[in-house]
Length: 140
Image (cartoon, rainbow, N blue to C red; front, side, top):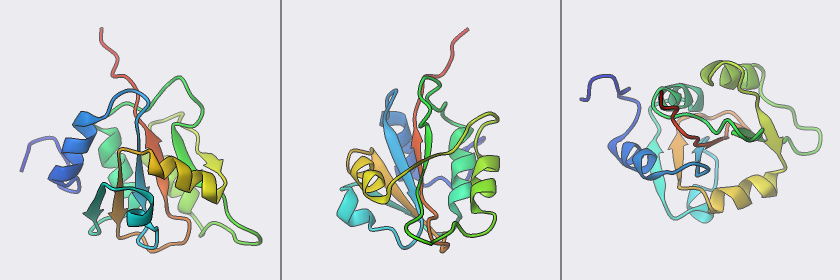
């Protein structure tokens, strides 16, 4: 185990995070998401929730400060609603001041195709997907 790195983050994800550059995206998906249909690089992290993994990842990388869509969820379809508390949970997992941006379902799938990877979590709630865009770590 590495000090200071959450054990929720599998080694394959650490590798992907290190490879990512400014503007690259990754998707944290619920267990229902068509990960293998949307991306060639799929990592399993079924022992945790999207929100837990997002919080751990945000300890290691900066989100893109120059765009409004640095943390993206999928819009609900038709009369569907987000599961109670889901968006609040995701909001708490992200750095303070980060707003959730939502995109239509098929736009979310399209962005997933060009993402660095998809991480499938154990989240079972509908619409439990979160896309994160990596930024630049400030240097002083």
